[in-house]
Length: 267
Image (cartoon, rainbow, N blue to C red):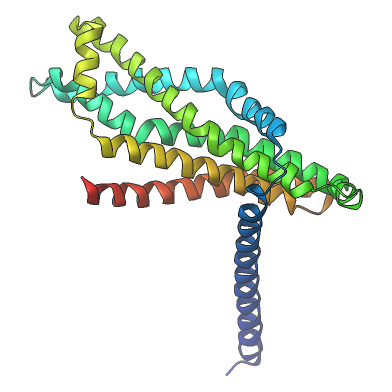
């Protein structure tokens, strides 16, 4: 056997072992981070003023982008679905199809993906810059509780604001769908809304709400974890922002699949 091959095998095993060790260590750190959040978030004193400020940053600052995106999603989805239904002479089913697609999946998912890109990166970069400039260390030395003030408030804000934004996105998307249907079919607003809510059930609304809450918590906790534990100077800030977006989006898709599967059992 070649000596170079025999010596490379232990190196490969050592590298693989190190990666697995780092992976499980990171999982353990994330576990502790989440437990610390639940430990401190619901214990007084509560930072209500900062929570409201973060809700404003997450919700109101994203209002314009969410409105535009939601309207375009509803308009384009309706426009693209029309040719398929018209082949079977079933364009009257279009409002029901749009409502099912938007309320069950598109509204919470689109809102979460936009928030992950806008809000998640902002949280990661903000906390990351505070970590590398030692502002968080200074807060700990001064006797304040930086974790409660910086992390708990942001996670609670995203958990509260994302469901509200998702509900708003759903209605804006339905408005975009209505404009397309009204232009082509002449359907009245009252008739359109009756057909929209007819196929929806209580499970649809509950699952959509649960999705939005889970997505909001995921965006907040991932962004805070990446920023709060960043290092390596300005490079670490960029990695924290990028990691917050990529990780949050990946987890959102995983959670979407799981929640859809669970909700299907109750239908």
